[in-house]
Image 1 (cartoon, rainbow, N blue to C red):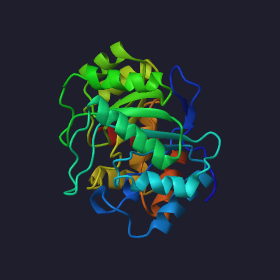
Image 2 (tube, rainbow, N blue to C red; image 1 turned 60 degrees about the vertical axis):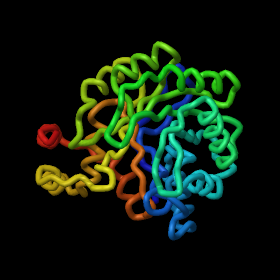
Image 3 (cartoon, one colour; image 1 turned 180 degrees about the vertical axis):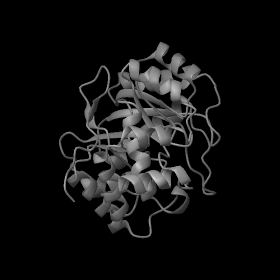
Image 4 (cartoon, one colour; image 1 turned 30 degrees about the vertical axis):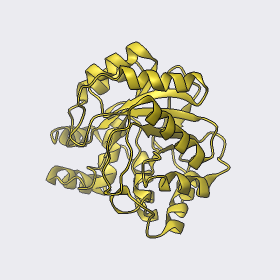
Length: 288
C-alpha cells in the first residue's frame, strides 16, 4: 500500500499537532456491537499497521470500545508508537454486559476512564480527548460545565494535552469554549445528514477541527442514486466519493473512517486523492 497525500494536513489550533486529514477510526476493530474481541485479532493488527505504513498519523479510539479491546489492539500493533502519531480518545460513556452505552460523566468516572485509556494504550498522557455526551439520537443540550471542568483538572495534571467535544449542539460548543480551549468537535455528519452545515463553517472560520463520525452512514451505509451516478462519473466507488466530498466540504474536516478489512482500508485511503469536479460536487450537495 503506497502512501498518498492523505487529504493534505490540518494543524489543531493552539497546538503543535499537525495531522493528515485522512485518519483512521478504530471502533470497528472490536467484536460485534463494538463489544468483546474481534473474530480475527491478527487481521485487526494488520489493518492498524497497514494504515500507519500508508501514512496515517491520526487514530481515533476510546477505551469503551470493547471495552478495552480496541486500545489493547492498538498497543499490540503499534507500540512503541512512531513519532508523529496522534492518538485521540473519548470519555463520557462506559459499557455494560448487555452491550449498552450508559453515560459516565462524573469526575470519578472520567478519571477512571482516562486511566483505562492510558493503561491500555501504554501512554503517559493523551494528545486529545473528546468529552462525549448526548445519546444515540444526538445531542441532549445538557450543560457540559461539570464534566468539562473535571477534564480540565486532568489536563492540569498533565494527563491530557488538548480537549474536544463530541455529539454536541452549537449551544454546548459555545459553553465548552467559554470554559476551556476546544480544538476539535466530533459529530454525526455525512453526505445525507447535514444538520451541522452552519456549525462546520463557523468552526472552520475559527480553525477548529471537525471530525464527522459515521462519515459513510454508520451501520447502514449511505445509499443514493445520485451518489451511485457520481461514482460512475468519476470512476470511483460510492464510499470513496462520499469521503472525497467531505474532504472538499471544508478545510477543517478530518476523516476517521473505520474498517477491519485491509481492502476497505485501501479503498478509504485512496479517497484522499480523489478530486471531485465542481459539477459532481453540486450534484452531491443536492442529496442533503
